Image 1: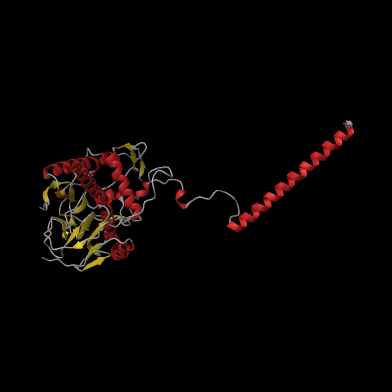
Image 2: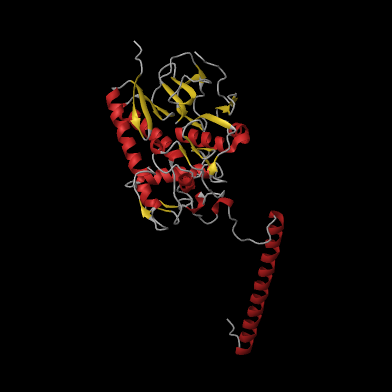
Length: 309
Length: 97
């Protein structure tokens, strides 16, 4: 008899966490995922005053001793910046705050008065100093890191790998729609619905694909939007301007070897705009892009099957 | 066995010293000659050690590591298995959050 996957979902990190397993007890997998999420939140949250990241952001140019998880998360963010030539940059923290995203998103006012904002490049990831030997991170005064683009994906990869290793199981972990897979997948693969909003998977355009390994991430400007005056803001910042990225594509999904790599690519694609399909194709990354008006285009080995069932 | 006088011994030392100087000068000239040929054939004007582009001093934003500590980042990696179309019921969803 072929065993069927089981899954459980719960609220975490201001979004939903979901774990699906095959070949082990679901409760044990859920507990391990919970531990990983607690750890990443304590290390990397921009909104917790007691997080390690908050201490780094208040460091005013002094090297701050951090644990291995934040060290990994910062190095992951810097790698993202390097591989995208700064299009995914962790020094967008101040820009996000000035645009109004200065607390957990559930607490951000949906509407508010117009903002007076200077259009300028964010400080830049090159200013961040990591000393792995001393386990310190240093950012100049006034520079604030936001690791949201990559820390969640890192947590998904870490949790999936740990669950597969410790429970000897096949596992899929989804954190707000960023998906990591580890261990032996079901024979038909893990079926994943791809849509604009992971919390509204039945809204068109949508399709379902099967994944056997690696990671899948979707970045979208459809969610985490708010109004200031006549301007609509969203959470994907273009480091070149410090403003919400121009919306050429509203949603980009990318499959890669890890959830982190998929997330880096999907976030960069939103910032790249018109150049995104070429950029993704040059890297051979299977991707699905939805234009502002709902047209879907595919890159590399992304299947063109349209599943609207 | 005949014994040499002091004058002949001094003359012999002078000849050996002169020969040594000429040999040293010749060796230096030959060394320079071959270095010039080598430099011309390899396109380098001097024999200073080459520096790889990636070996510039560590800049902020990068971890400080030894040259053999971390392999070069291969960049964003494609999945081991490409996504496939399916008619299965989804067990998870991927979208903006």
